[in-house]
Image 1 (cartoon, rainbow, N blue to C red):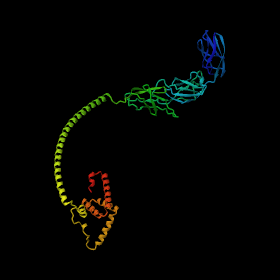
Image 2 (spheres, one colour):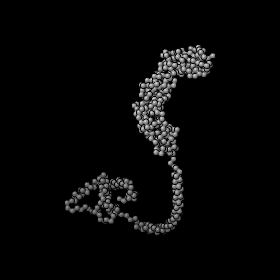
Image 3 (tube, rainbow, N blue to C red):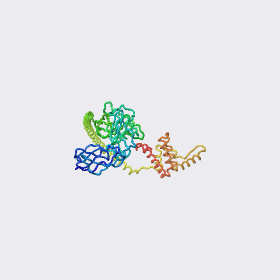
Image 4 (cartoon, one colour):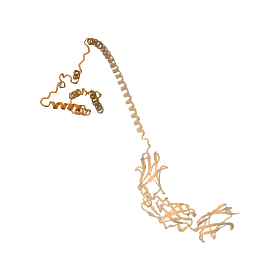
Length: 477
């Protein structure tokens, strides 16, 4: 005996067209079956032993629940089932209200009672051709759709904005939305890409971005909405940056030749292929050249080593000859030194015997100092009394006394000496004479004279270090 357990769905739009499944047992029995929604017949679609499928009719009584009755071969199955007619779905807003000619751009549809639509679709009609695409219900007020294509085939020459002749939705049997007049869906030209190169294959270094040039890449719409581009290198996607006239593709780490495919909406186009060269720049000719150069360099190094070894051998022989000559010379010098030392020893013995008889000769301090300070001058003016002609005797003595006081001033004396040394016309002989006269004047203050000499010697050392003169010149004062 046929029995009815339930139905799905339990509600639908009042315009009908809802595909209803009545579930039960032994529903495939009998030769005919009839399902009534109130006083309206549900259009039979098919049945099995477990279910009956039919399409709901238009509600004559408007919205509200209706009683469902199932009859098999005129035998009515008694079961309390109801189906609720609700208001037809409506569309209030579509965002965005544009697409490209190839379609398949995502659209967000907002409205009411959208969840009762079983197989929602979106349609356009242009130049006598109707195109349909699918939608997906998200909730009762929102669904996402893909825009239908405007033309059957890709037409890159389409360069102007087009308006669809008709635009609407297929929601079960809802006739009011087949032509939707609240929105005028615009179609912009498809993006067009230039070939990557004249040969069709672009040579590219690893890591370098791939630039795809073209036009119509960004539709001129407000709000900054852009198309969703996908660029595949072979089967690997790359990161894409979109501008008005080009796509910038950051390729993954690949080498070899790959076909580039651009996907946007329903458009799939290939501007060519790319050949990504390997990081290694050593091609076979380069490897052969490097090997030949390395072999030649090795031969040159071997020849240089052979020449160096031969030259070293010659230098060793020369060094041995020089060593022998030096040994001979050293032997002769040692012999001569021995003979000279013997003669010197004899002379020293004779001199010692002379000193024992006559004593060690010496000079008094005045004579010794004069010979050191003024060598070769027996009668120097410093040994005589000051004689000045005329009436200048007293003034000269006073001037010399005052100059003597200035000399005893360390700052003046150092400045005086440094000033004289800076004169280019001040010769070495003049320096010696001035130094001898100053030392004569400072005989009574030798400690002070020694301190001045230390300062002058320190200055001389500093100047020699700054000018990097040879150290032997240090004592040539």
